[in-house]
Image 1 (tube, one colour):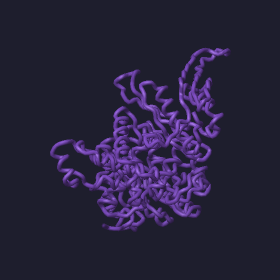
Image 2: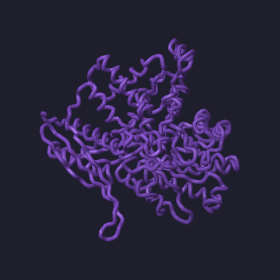
Image 3: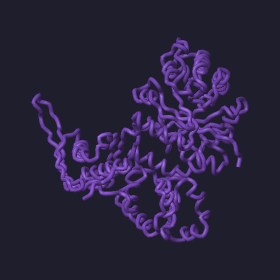
Image 4: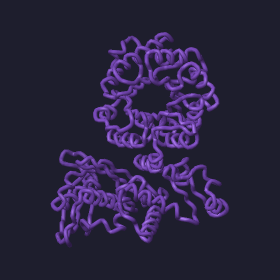
Length: 533
């Protein structure tokens, strides 16, 4: 065990947002940032203030952190402007972030070709920007863009860029493999050269994954002296992605003996965090992902399975429980029970579940997951399933029927419009309700009709809102008859946010199931009392 400290810097909220098909809202960013802070990440990069409305909204109202430091990302001053009056830098200074990370060219060819400035002006831009930022905030980092390519072309100039930032007061010098083309042996050789000139405790590595070497390059840089690593959750990022922090954290801690801000207890949440993050992005979690994939510790029957039961170290490089995963051996469900018990403990049930109920619950979960349910990204639906099994959820209402109609027509002004209308019949205790409501789409109409019927009995539902809605096709080979999974995220005026799920061959039915769970969860956490039948 080395015992040395490695600092973790997450760029999911900026680099991850550049992933094709990924788009974060300001609330998405706040939720992810809170999870990163809870995990123990040292630096959370919130984005680029002034670059887009989403990042501006995030920095106007960032979440409070218990551990992490919020970073604002931007570029060095433009040529011909002073650092104090550069609009891009001013936006960073005004963001309120205690840490500023400034990207600048560390390649003479890039400075001349991309920025149109000579070598000396590029050095002045770096130094002026770092120095001015240092006067405004407690901590500044220099993100040396294209460092490895620049070093290969002109080592002395690449080092001169680092020197300019270092002398101007940069706390960290971030060595970037911007196009992801450098190989691990090159990274280790170059970082060793840099570490001979600058304090290793101020060197960081930022690797892209274009040769599938981002994690390997990061580890090589750490071996050569870097003491800060940058990456994203599940390796998100433009092109082929960034270094995957979910793989790096256990490798640094369990394999190389480094300390990080992540505790052993927090590391046991890695699997759930990774899978929940994918579900929230409406992406299928990678079953074969290192450490956290569903198949990472799976063993088919036969020689391997029997050997694992005798001594897991034969075919498992770590105890899967260390990262919150579980062993999957077809001849034994013991790991499934232990994993379920851990999740029940995290829910804070405060009761001991009888063995027969635990086994029944485990069987129910496996059966539901085989039909398409996924509880990693729907924690509220999972908690409701558990509590229903234990008899802790009352029947707040009973649905008798619903009908949803979509009408596409021209209005009086000749505009083509679509109107959704939902009709609900339900009972609350001995009272029967029949309501009709319009909405912006069938799910919204259904939600309005449900709450219109339930609000007289449960007024707290007026303070609940749906904030996100995602649909995944589970059986694409079935075409328009495919089974769908609907994920709904809800929030209330108490600051609570929860996720629920529904699965059905009918998308409206799946949506109702997710809505039913969302409303039931709200009533349960509010302590609402179900009326007598």
